[in-house]
Image 1 (tube, rainbow, N blue to C red):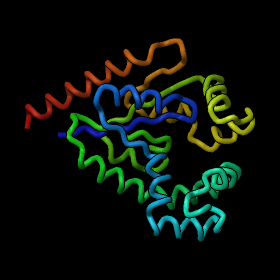
Image 2: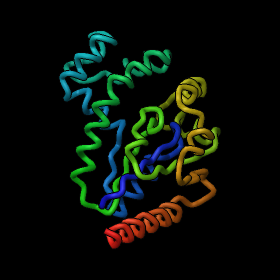
Image 3: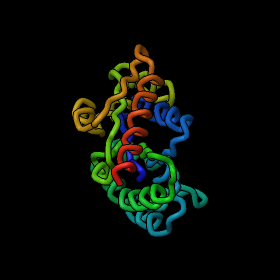
Image 4: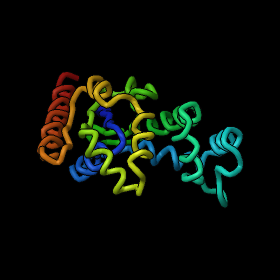
Length: 202
């Protein structure tokens, strides 16, 4: 019995950092954004749909031009919703196939849009990663070389952070004050115990 755990948080919350800690503990992690990019390069149906909706400039030498796509979707919520509606079904299917192959006690699906896409419905529990807004802004500015205004545009395109955390079963605080690793270890132990109990009942 493999538990399916979601891991989510807004841009700059540090959810990828948290995911890497779970990986160090031997837990397989599915990165939804990476998978979506891979699928947009490999899946011919997706490629066709992206080109039809965003133009031939979406691909350069057969590879997705992420900078071009980002410049469109982060300026226009309707375009962002359209891109998500194209990629989500394929990513959901890909994640399902991936999870079915794993043999660890539990797996993690890391995705910013777990609730928006409906994929949270296919998971047993969801962990939220929370960081204060000013920290998130600074992290993304440093990481992506964006202005504060550009970062805020991206943040405003996502679900409200407080609302997102309320939907989560567990919250890890990543505010550069509290240590992340002990919080992850506590959840790791909890999930392993849950799996053992369930397997004993079965």
